[in-house]
Image (cartoon, rainbow, N blue to C red; front, side, top):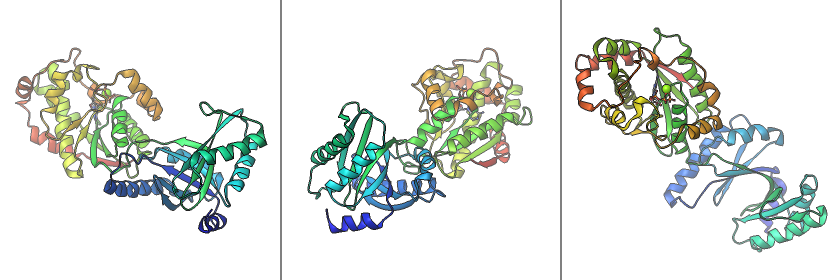
Length: 396
Ligand code: ATP
Ligand code: MG
């Protein structure tokens, strides 16, 4: 072991968090940007926990944890940082392999398990032993001290050894990360957030791909109570736990709906509501610098989501409309919604503005031509600008 390595381990605090990301897919310049964004996002997420950025190693960002008391809180926050493949709670060990082996064996003695495996990752390629040899030497010590058996396939206890250029660490706890790409790596999008199950999941999918997701909700206050809007705010807050500085934009849509009801054929209402939502959202997107709109449409799920109707809705805006759930079925979407903690809020029975004046038999195939025809009596520009005047923005 190098003098530097022992020196660092002896004088630095012992608890470390090693955050690992997937390096393979990253090209050199991308990697620099990726690591900078990821580090910034982790630091933001862990604000107030006392965790300090320590140093970098290949494929890893290493943090100092001031005290293990903070670990449960830190762990739950770190799980919500996109771009993290997994992370380890580690302790630094001074000295060389014999000391490492004894320290790890001592830690293992305090655990309850029947079988174990040592997983060594050596990101210091100049280290004098290869990973399998390190694993073997430590495994021997653990076996000798605990009497437990090695099981490389399905161990009860996995012990991770991280041989980094600056220090050697071991860990008994590895946690899966959120995966994907860091917030702000892929640009800004505007997600249309209803109070339902689907759209929060759609917003989350885009967040996971590195987009900063702003949200817009259309409500029917004062024609309906504020409860629907409050539900959307609650959903936005749930999503806000995954990205810092989230915003929900709320727009009063009831007057637009009244106008459509007064002027257009009953069966066309839903598609015309959607077309107006798209126009308003597109205008809002331009003002906040969003490059695409996101919806929770899933093909064939409801009358408004047939290919014909989706095309007719899409036609009135030029921004790309991203529909990450298009090929998913309700069960998959529901499972995802539960996983991100949105489901219980999504199923609250508050009304959605689309339930206002909804026809019993909405058109499932409203072509573009007839939709345009149905809109002829409407003052589209006036409706869009008056709707935008009602904009309220909430921090989420
Ligand atoms: P969700 O579960 O997301 O409400 P849904 O299955 O009820 O979806 P629709 O009501 O047809 O389907 O809505 C399709 C998409 O249109 C929604 O996923 C959402 O992106 C957008 N949308 C619908 N209503 C609103 C609204 N009131 N405010 C903002 N976006 C909306
Ligand atoms: Mg809905």
